[in-house]
Each structure stands twice: as structure tokens, then as C-alpha cells.
Image (cartoon, rainbow, N blue to C red; front, top):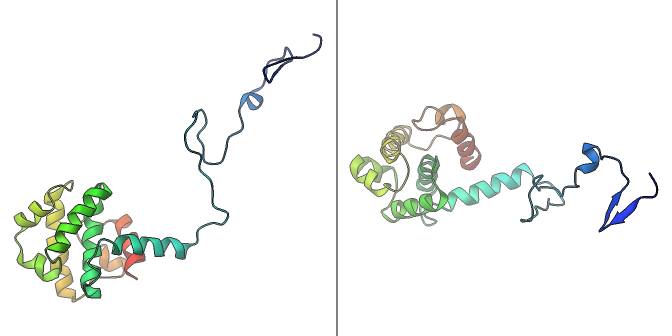
Length: 173
């Protein structure tokens, strides 16, 4: 074949391109084959573990009453984490706001009936199981006189699995 022909930015040489030659260069964070859309820019420095834990504490304690005592706020975080499983953040926020406005604490959960608690969290998925788990957690916290903070104590609570334990250990300590 003769000289290469340049046509609208493409060079035609008459040879078939290999797969690596056909692949277009990708920006960091973009998906191959995606046209347009937002490009993800990576930060200049990696986020440290302490920064992630601090952000998690700010997030979870944001669902609590800032004027309440520390023990009450820790229980409110436990309830928020229990409700967060398979729940949209906006639904979680509204449910926690209504519970906190009612005075969410261990004593409140112990004296309220499970049906009324379920009605207060009715917008949350699996509200029957979660209401039962919150009542059981309140009983366990009242017996222990504080919200558990270790992995072994938290995993014993109903409705708390390994993923939620990891969140709680990082946030409560």
C-alpha cells in the first residue's frame, strides 16, 4: 500500500488495528464505553483512616440530638445504625428525626409498646423486625448500663451483623 491517508483525525494505513490500539485512553474513574457524564477526579492525597472515621462519626452523630447526654446520643447512634440496613438515607433521616423529637432514649424505648414504635418507623423497610431489634437492644443496654463498644458485645445484639459492628466500633470508640 502507498502512503497513509489522514481522514478527520484518523490515520488509515490499510492495516487492522490490534485490540490495544483500538482501545481509547480512559480518564481515571470513568467506565469504558461510557459516553459523556461526569469525570471523577482523584484527590491529590489519599484519605487517611482517621479522616474516614471522623467523617463517619459526623455522619452518624448527625442523626442524634446534640443537646442530649453522651450515653443517650450513643444509644441514638445504635438505633440509627439498626434502622439504616436497606433504608434510603432520606427515609432514615426523617425516621430518626421523629424518634429524636419524641425523646429517643433507652427508657423511652422500654416503656413504649412495640406497635407504637413500629408505627413511628413505618417508612423504614422491615419495620417489624427493626422495632423488635430496637426493643431488644434497649433491654440489653439497660442491663449493661451503657451501649456496648466492643466487637464481641455488639455482635450479640439482635439485628447487628459484622458490617454494622464495624461501623459501630469505629463510631462509638
